[in-house]
Image (cartoon, rainbow, N blue to C red):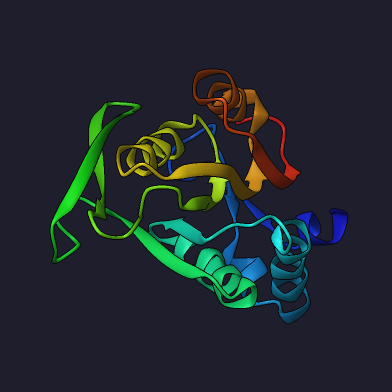
Length: 177
């Protein structure tokens, strides 16, 4: 959607030279942009049978929780290691230089739950892939992954669809890095 895309600012050379950072905070502070974004997701998922929305820390929380509220379903936070107080399961994933882990509460998802995973952006697909694995460890069914921005040149959406057989829905995409 071109209106939403136009409200996402690009910050050159952040966090390092050659990177074009797609900053959604400009979308968040814009009432029209935020409303259109949440509305786009609501229209897509309102009759899908989703039982919970899982949001990846931190920006996935913003859109995931708002969407869960609008759909009348539960919200599941997927957090960085050590941030959840209860019993958790974790999944390691690759970063550009090393690895990291994300976690979910063991009781957050029940067998047969139909889960939508939300994040702001898909780049290489590492975090999104780890989130899918977490949901599957708890016997949940991943319905789809929803993001605002896809960076197709980095291959994350294709990796998720090829390796995990999960469709990635994005509202807009930006070419390049």
